[in-house]
Length: 169
Image 1 (cartoon, helix red, strand yellow):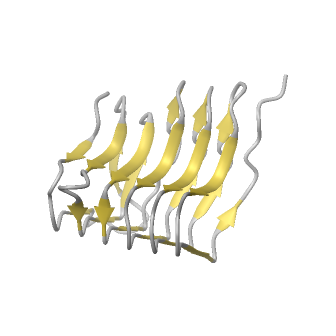
Image 2: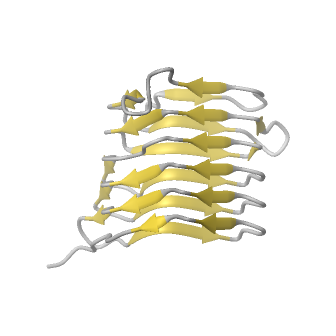
């Protein structure tokens, strides 16, 4: 897969920020992978990643962070991503102390499963003031607004999850 921005293991203090006003976000689009792909390891985690005012759309998936600590994703859109495999708006795996705030995962589509915001094996992560709206599996997959598994101390507040239709034959 070809990702828009790739962050390698052990990187610290990266900021991906668009200086455009909030109505015209910086755009990462048309990649066959994630718009932003940050994959640390247990030995070399990603630390203090800050993503702000970015639109990751028309990719196969939006934002992926694995083994990330103290990450912030703010005012970002992960909309209109499409793939025949699972599609993720924002996916955080094996991390802690993350904050997702004022983000959207909307109108993503797949012939498989679609996850708006997916937290897997995370500790003390907060999702607030975010939306998952009209994500859709086009065939036999399932659709989830927020999906949290194997996680401790995570908080969700003031979020909106709207209709996510499943495939109908």
